[in-house]
Image 1 (tube, one colour):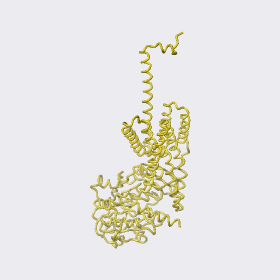
Image 2 (cartoon, rainbow, N blue to C red; image 1 turned 180 degrees about the horizontal axis):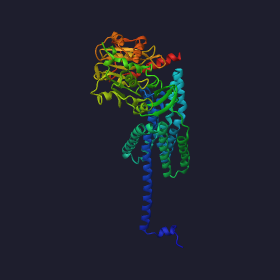
Image 3 (cartoon, rainbow, N blue to C red; image 1 turned 60 degrees about the horizontal axis):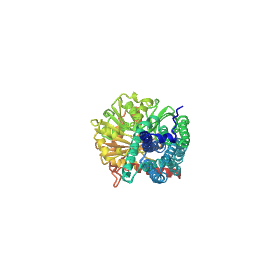
Image 4 (cartoon, rainbow, N blue to C red; image 1 turned 60 degrees about the vertical axis):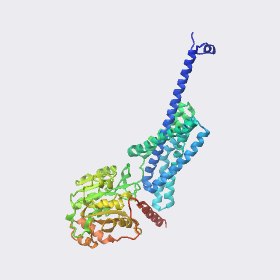
Length: 556
């Protein structure tokens, strides 16, 4: 019987041609294996770069419902992420020099992937703890929980920092080509980061949520790490990391689902993470309310049993009445920058009839919520433009003028700085009718009006007269002021005289509340007062100072 097994005598009897063919085949197999291993390594570099930005973007959305999306939060998040990566680069380079083996890198990335998969579970109790800080005005709990959550990201980001220096070490074959190798690996990692940023922000987070996005990054890292180990025939680590992959998949599919954040009041009837906000729709008695991000303010309210809200939305009805001889029949149109779910438009058209209303809202998901829960489509004269407010005035609305322009573009408690500057108010003024007025909703406390004063002083650089009306929030405590700028010179006493011509009972009710409880006053220029400009608008710094004062007073 013929045998296919070579023995030494058979090998010795091979012709030179046969020996060369066998050697060539072995070399080809080895080269194919090397190319495959190299491709897996490069793929892991790309996935690692993508995962870094996916984790960072997910971290911002994880924090938003509890801490918001202010510049302060972003500075803490980005700063600590860079600290973790810096430490990872340094440690990764050290480890690569000591153990320059692909199996070590694959083990590191597998552990990074597993730690990413634990974040949605471990972060929840820490985030819930932060609510105690808000309720008790505890600075320690507030910052402790914020830092605690960000520290959760230290393990995966530190480990992901290992990837680039380790890959450069593994792929460097000579000093003469080290620069090209480092450049190629860095470029590939950066390309992954670019993809991770856009895919997570525009696709994954809005459509599958923050937790599922983190699980996706976790699974990708584990799968590519296990694939690399399989190429090396390292079966024992494959078995271990396959168990970790199974755990992450189990969490992704079977971990109990709950609300991202419990309702601050009432009952949650809808929640959604959009590209701009964490959105909650709440049922509070007969009223439907819209809460965003931290949830410490109501952004829209709809109650089929009552038109007026008792809050800031009512006051856009009366903005132009500081003009001499202004009558209800002079009201022609309104634009709302930051229209949310359409509360102001409901009230305006109920009092003045089907006048044109242009609502401007940057978040399309909020507009969808308005149509679904807040009867936005019932306002036949309303047109909602999904756009940034300032951009709208400069583009689609550039040829329009309105009697009232309302500005309520809070992402509570923060205001987009570009909607607070002299340049912005100049743009707004160019869109007012001669007897028109702009009104902005500004937050304050009983003892701290620095934001109101800063906005009023900024508006005085543009408008001939500026007035303030203090208003109650939904719990009847003073926490907002409406700042009004008129397009033509006006007088404070015009307001009371014009109020006498109001016939609609709802309009009379708002006038009555303004005159009796509104502490109506005209603002005069402040020497040395804050003026916000496009170049310098420290609006978040002002609001942070207010928040710290409230927390300090509450703690005492």
